[in-house]
Length: 382
Ligand code: FNR
Image (cartoon, rainbow, N blue to C red):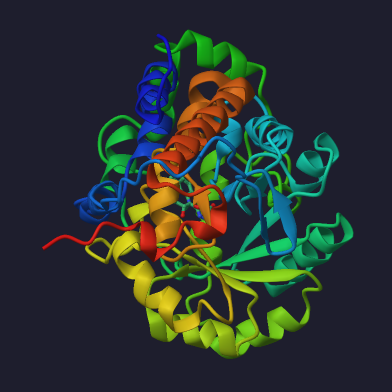
């Protein structure tokens, strides 16, 4: 299949990955209302078409959280990526850095922070979950600081996990009928390309950062169970202040959807926030980031670096998020589909596509630099 868009990568990933993995990436929580809204609301944002403004030279570069980026885009944290392609986090991080961008490693990645850091030229960004095991958190913070990670994303929208029906249906989570392990094995047999490349040659499949706690024999379900047990629902803004005090780099709170929480984040000493509903995987029915973003950017945009994610499926969507008030955009499923479809080469191709689409969006809205993409490029109707 010839790939021209994120939708093509999605289809290619669906063909290559066992169902339990494709559905883990593709799905959202409950009725997937927020997931659908995220894509539709963003796609529904109309931009102003402007003409005859000399757009022969475009500058897509930007600086976000002290980092120079080739465009205002980074790969956001996506758990289990090492299951989508062999040592997937390393492949994706290399592709991002080769494109002059950044990669954010999830706490629950298959490759550890040390493995990805060793495999990349520059220090990567890291995402940490709030865990009950504060010793684990302290160790991860110290490791990330030692490895020179300049930016920490602290994800706060998962004090409890939202239910994802697809994970039960696919056998990723426990459910009735054949045991999950058997169902996943049978699904893998139907995808020989993946089974050979990742299933056999991509081991270990555990969660690299957590493996030291659980031992070598731990299987994927042990890791998922650990995550389920260890997310801390008792956390408050006070804890954030003290964690912030222990982190030397830039500190970004991921999972803000309300202007009041954005103000709290500023008061707690954050350098930035990610406007996010976790890809529609948590509280179903909440606003899309596209809808929540303008009020949040108005509330804290002068004090914090406001990033956003959710439903970004093209370079045009990147322009839309910037127009709504974001300084930069995190890709989620877009890069996970690309990695699942064609490994690191897929991620490299995806980033080329996003860049080309962003260029066209800029040229046709009549802007030549990233800071010019603001509310003035939004079409006002009615
Ligand atoms: C995620 N997301 C996520 N976020 C995070 O902070 N830590 C994580 O480990 C994960 N894991 C994860 C796995 C998968 C499969 C998905 C799809 C998402 C959320 C992610 O960073 C981002 O917020 C959303 O993916 C953005 O929405 P879109 O672009 O995927 O629609």
